[in-house]
Length: 371
Ligand SMILES: *Cc1c(COP(=O)(O)O)cnc(C)c1O
Image 1: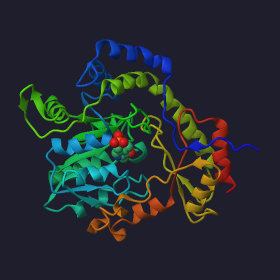
Image 2: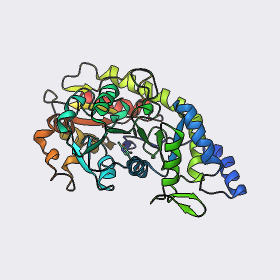
Image 3: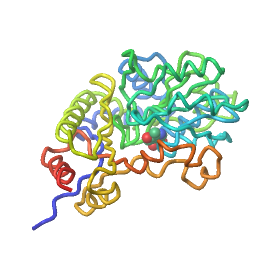
Image 4: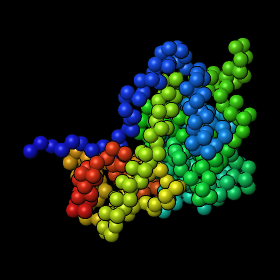
């Protein structure tokens, strides 16, 4: 019997190739490849319209956007952040010479726990960098309240949160001083590589636009030690095309999410993360928590999937605070992070992407129901 095809946790959404050809022909004929060309201008406007924001600056990827966001607000000293994220969140702090201070997460949302932030604030604290994990909105009001009381900036890592609405039905990226998106191949909306900073006003947008172009203000004026963070015309053109397919892709993700939830209901030892609601979530991931009541340990279940050629992922294990460049920090100690430590040991992300077929979902579900 032949092995069934492998199933990956995600599969990038690609529009039909022939639809991209006219975009490429435009680039080839006008010969503008980067530096704020016509597709770059178009995509910034189209994303502002789609996301319901006024100011957005495109980037070559989400990590350079995070690094630049910290530069734009001149953040120094210590920044409070979560250990339960992709490593780029904390790396962006180290690249700016900032000390990350890890704070534990909420056991229900797995986002930074506002109730634990105040105890971690010191005279060196200048900002909070929370993450909307799996696209579920943070408790943005509680975080803003603390930031206001202690005069701290808030930079959201919104890499998972494309198109997400907050509890007040506003675009989630309108929260904080800045929000950073990623358009990496594995994300809900992708430009192969790409990212963006969403900001509050024209002045800061201009500053960010200078920073991503070496600090150039005009041909002969360099106003800041900037970086090359620009998005190319190729990626921006692809973004314009991807936007035409995004609503369909999100609708399909929602169907998959609903089916998983229905079929996994009542299985002892498996817990789905709370549904953030129809409009609030983008169904970027399908995380489940495997606890002691389940007949297999999380890692035994993970291995069982691997043996069947199903590449489920343990996002986020290990915690960022476990990596060698972080684990010496006092805040990285496991005693400080019991909820994040437990979640990292229980989490498993199931395959979810628009092209996932019903038979493939059945293979995943069978393995979970009869382990
Ligand atoms: C993907 C991701 C990033 C990094 O984005 P890139 O575009 O890959 O550089 C940062 N933070 C989180 C939470 C992510 O998932």
